[in-house]
Length: 287
Image 1 (tube, rainbow, N blue to C red):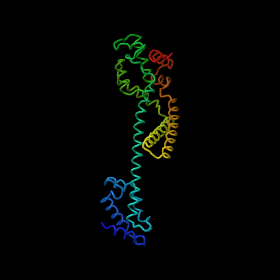
Image 2: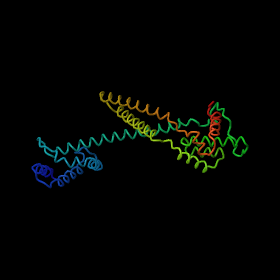
Image 3: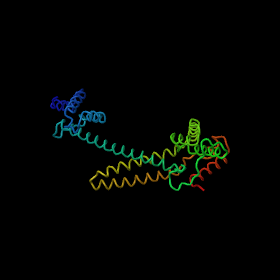
Image 4: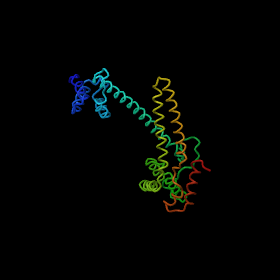
């Protein structure tokens, strides 16, 4: 490809000749793919990404070109290098956001564990004073009543328990696993915890966390003091938004109300209140 041909075509287009756009684009694309390093690109993959992202801008280069002493070829190289730089910046931002998202997932997992307030103490923990669970083959009145109360508590905590935890409870208590899973699934469907208000708060919290993480990652690499000052302000601002949203979410109860548990099981609410209260006093230190 002759660069003179490209410059000549653009000059003719600027003088009003029509029907030259396709040929100009073909010549530009051929040269960019042939010499990507000249245009600030490293590989054919980056060339393709630039054309996909900036196709409209590339198509308008010939229209935007003005003869200021430099030929169109120099103008095109400068424009492509700017687009390549923008592409690299977007990749860095995506890397920061992805890293912040991973951090968010780890933090969310920790938060889910922390919010499980009603787990029974581990027998291996020194100082655990909760009474032992009844044996699986114990069919006495006390053991039967205890198992029934555990069902109340499982339904109440349906949104906190995953299938693995439910399977462990069923194994320990001697419950039918499929029956217990079905009961909890009905509870989750009948009383969804993620209402629009909570979902909106979570979106705001997640966005603030991701922005805070991205700004913190940029801050760790930035050398310019003015930019660092701006990034520190961004981190503090987003941290404040995150903490406010997290506090609001923490006050939104994820437990199913006792009244709803009673309606689902078809028993009086007082029975659920008494049963859940007794289990919590026995194993969670509630008075």
